Amino acid sequence: MITESEKDIIVQILGKHPSRVIIPVLNEKQVFNKKGESYSPKSIQNILNGITENHTVEKEILEIVETKKAEKNSLKNFKKQVLSN
Image 1 (cartoon, helix red, strand yellow):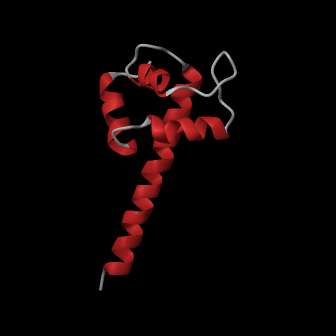
Image 2 (cartoon, helix red, strand yellow):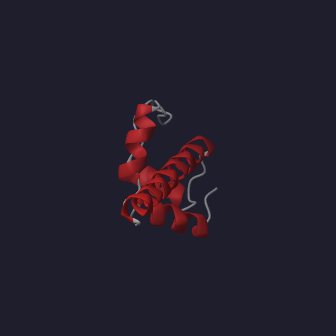
C-alpha cells in the first residue's frame, strides 16, 4: 500500500497528474484490471491514495518513478557537463 509520504514523492517526480504518465506505461506493458481493460485515472488515483491495494500496479509505479528519476539525473549531469567551462 502506498503511504501519503510515498505519494508525495511520486507526485513530485511524475507531476500533478501522475495517471497521465502511469496509464500509458501500464497499457504498453499489458497490465490491465480484472476486466482486462486499461486502468482508469480514478483507479490509479485510488491506488496512489492508499484506498485500493494493488501490488502489481504499485510495483509498476515504482519502476516508472525509478526510470524518471534516472532520466532527470542523467539530464542534470549532461547539462552540467555541457554548460561547465
